[in-house]
Image (cartoon, rainbow, N blue to C red; front, top):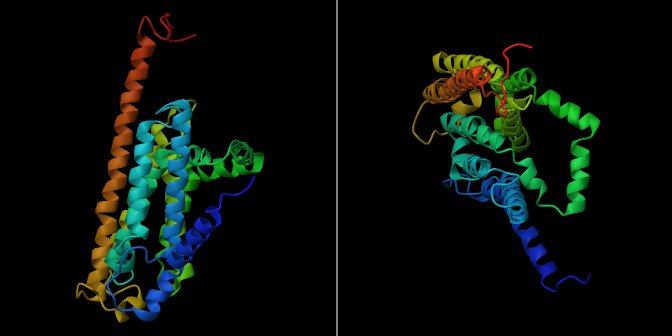
Length: 319
């Protein structure tokens, strides 16, 4: 097939734009170290977020065009993706990302947006099907075959087990807040990107595992328990940061805080962010899951005791 004349030029322009965004942190650091942060300073993160959004939008449009709106991907799940993607972009591509490098409290807000706003919304959206439909039929079949292959499917089942996902997410949270690792992330763009990827990735696994259906219906019991456990250990880490008598991260002492806070005051606010608002997200989600669990249990009991039971037939309580 003969390519359209304008296509190579468009591809070249897109590649140049992507390179420019990816290179922008180094350019900004070289010439404008003290300038106010702007949008899209983390170029590679911006590119990845943009690609994810384009893939999902294109795939969802194709799927709904063929199957009908709400078929295959429910409208509410698409709404969750839009909200989660917006939160992800706000954390990684907005001026918040630049300000987060100058204040530990803003850094904590950035991390909590990734873990307690973007991650649960994107996990609820179940975006993989929508993204898959962005590819041609042959590619969809190939990717689907790879995803359902034995080793990969087994690995995914393990990673999205509630116990494993909770442990992985907790380990990422506690390990990266060790002074040595956190300081290393502050001093290296590569380690900083790895820190963000582990925070966000394990958070998605955690929330995904809690929303999994078992035997065709939601399993709220494990969700309540693991949300409660996570609220406890994240809150405890927040308490330690808030009540520490001295700053944990020496690198913070040499940076100029945009709010005029001392390093210890900045750390105390960061600890409060993790302790209170983030803890409320986990606790609120646990209470919601508990309410749904009680409601579902009551509904099943009513159905089982009803003379019409399932499908209009009497269903005995015991067989």
